[in-house]
Amino acid sequence: MHLDVHDLREFYYRSTLGRAAQKVIRTELTRLWPEAKGQTVVGFGFAVPLLRPFMDDARRVIGLMPGPQGVMPWPAGQKNVSVLCEDTLWPLAAGSVDKLVLLHGLETSDHPMALLDECWRVLGPGGRAVFIVPNRAGLWSRADNTPFGFGRPYSLGQLESQLRSVGLIPVKTLSTLYQPPSSKRMWRKLAGTIENAGHHLPVFAAGGVLMVEVTKQVPQPKRPGLTEAVKRPLRVLEGMGGPVVKPV
Image 1 (tube, rainbow, N blue to C red):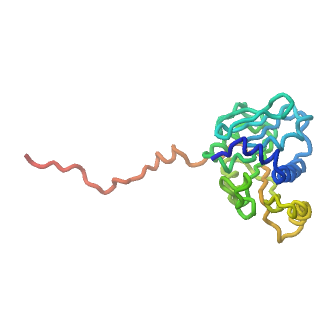
Image 2 (cartoon, rainbow, N blue to C red):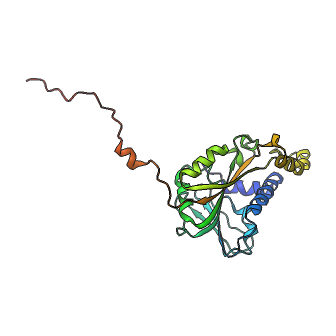
Image 3 (cartoon, rainbow, N blue to C red):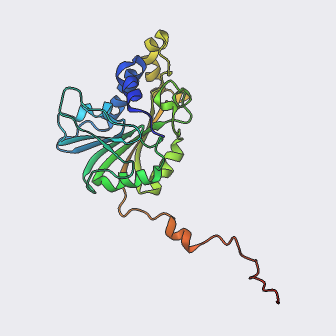
């Protein structure tokens, strides 16, 4: 179930902890994608805090927000680029997206596989997508004072397997957000030090979120679905005899 857009806005824009999380994740994203000149950049879920670095150079930036979550105008003080949409029906042409970011989109969706199919559909040739989800092994997925404490947390293996099954091939994976999910002043002062340690010491190999960059496999692999299920119906009545007609 998707979170409410007002709660997400309060966290990322008006809380110290949320602004810190936004900064860490956005820094990692811009390391993966240092520029997007002339490209179409799309975010789904509540990815708009991560899209601002691309506003100046990208040909187009779009923030898709799922219906159950709700939508807010973004960016503030500029022409609105955020759109309300269904999880599995985006107002985008097939193959039209160069860069796609999902934050609080996959783990909270009621139809994750159909959502991934939609991601595959809109990505263009050579396009890249980054999926940002709560890390099952991290502290943030266990803290309900942040948006990462809701929805389905993932292990890296689970996320990569789900992505591959729809034809989204991982090319780079990383973990980040090592600082504790606490607003206490002591932890806020140590946040930068803990982030640096987490990236360099194997003992801190479980950041709060996983980030997986993928590219699109063509053609998309086929998965068992309704057609295959119909071909193999459950034989719940097998072995039962036919109707018995009693003599009158």
